[in-house]
Length: 280
Image (cartoon, rainbow, N blue to C red; front, side, top):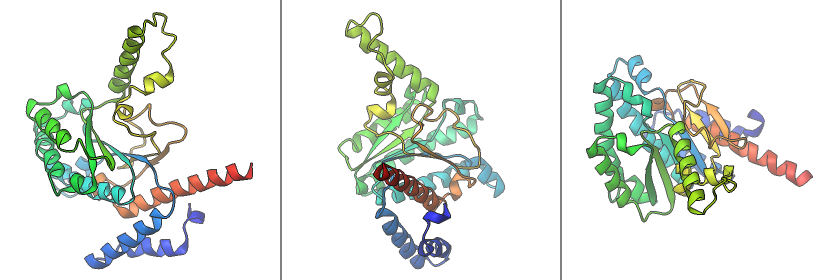
């Protein structure tokens, strides 16, 4: 990837480590301005992994790790919005996560109940950038209070159309694909297609939760914490054109130093493809 990275950007990535807040803000602005001159993904997904291991490494409680992870989400989301990335999809809670200790699950549900409405309020992040919030998954499994909070946050952002934030919770790709197939079959039967000839890959894909909320095809998939598997997150959406990154950093520590190389590799890929098409 170094062949795609000019030396001024190498220097700026190193300078982003400066401890001075003003210098860091200015360098961040400069880096984002440079990145924005090239192609940026339209849809990026983050599997926000490593909150608990991050907390253990610092001697913190698990819920503190999740709290730090939420703050990282806000920072990374704002970076995406400043780059005009249209859709950001995050894996917030797997259906299997209900098998975790009750204390941890309760803390996560409490965080969801308060934080989703908080970021959707007037003047906060989603309002400032015109972001519509969608919560994707089997919501019937969530506590009633959390369901009410989700409905309120989605209602508050319903007219925002500059960008989309998809929060997958509680989610699994198996459930999403099963639901999409059921919907495609139901639609075919309603159209009197009794032999299933109208059910195609395209009609199933149109029923995926990310498609239903208007997100484009997935360009970039990032999983943090060094685990190298998808873990039932967007397994249909990850296709031959999706750039997949398995980053060693725990999610709460994920920042611009991790994100810039991902974006630069995406730009290199696009430029290579454009060069190949011009030479044909």
